[in-house]
Image 1 (cartoon, rainbow, N blue to C red):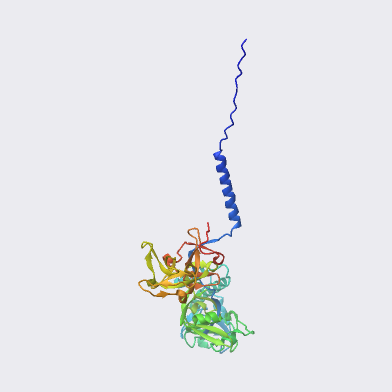
Image 2 (cartoon, rainbow, N blue to C red):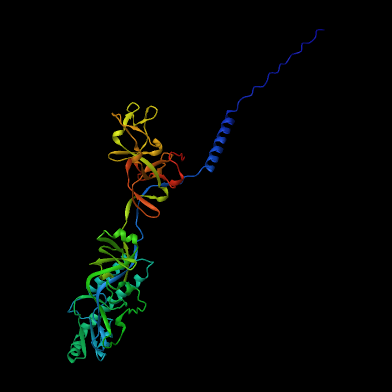
Length: 459
């Protein structure tokens, strides 16, 4: 019987296939880990976007007003009745007040029926202007304006009633004047009428410092509240001129800023209005005082001895950057005539003398009409420049200057740009827009210029 043949099975080694997807996943994971590690371990650079802005120093002052003013006193005793409202401009024929010796006529004038009183068109016009002025200058944080507004409206209402009462009782007034028991008073000259005293009357340019330091000030808010006047009692105050002055103590820095300015613009905090005032700096003792001379706006502030104002100086507008972004570097200022075209006329550069003369094309950081600014570290210490078409050389070390700048990071790395500062405060600077060599609107700059190096990769 024939033997069966055994089939011989040969085992081949298994073929290991490379898992491409796994390798790619591992590489991506390694890259992510490296990126996260690099991000966490490197210094972060904060970025600031350049915007238009302005800087105005805090030049707010509580200025003391000096006016040509006269306090008018009664020449007789009696019961007063006031014809003219507070804050009115009066002439020599204007009736300010009447003085009733018996008091019966004054009582009759004050108690005349008001129910049938009608407001004239002028009354309505005055009300409208007062309300409009209050609304335009309204500030919810300054309640003093409400008191002033209330006083102004009350005066106008009382004036409207008084005018009608005087008209209705004209016959009684004439009879009392004829009998000599009622006398009407007019001012000695034209001026602006105020029915209050603040205790600083008599203040002049020569004594305003001492007057301001007075401790025994006794203001009288409304002289009209007295029902009876004695001889030589104050009745009203008359401001004789539209010319007035504002005085304030200023720092030496502000005094130096203003010393060559014959006039400046100021803003009144009360209503935001502005005007121009002539300036004078006066030194009294160890302190410096600014005296502003004005010929307008007096009427609006006639009731106030101290006026809040802002000096509109050192206001600059332009590209606004934080001072923390500013760094300083040294530059060679090299005449443009020493530059030539190299690398097949593609690049502008300099011929630098070393072992052999070599053409170098350093970055130009700034340009004037005659010169280029080259960063010192780009050329090194005491480079020797071969002047084109000449055997002479030039060492730019004598031209070395320091210039301020910021780091532009628009392209992902720190690129130092020279800036021209127009004005600086403690925290910010206003710079000019210098086009291709400088910083322009919406550029991104490093916020901390002292902690970054030129050329550093940012992202």
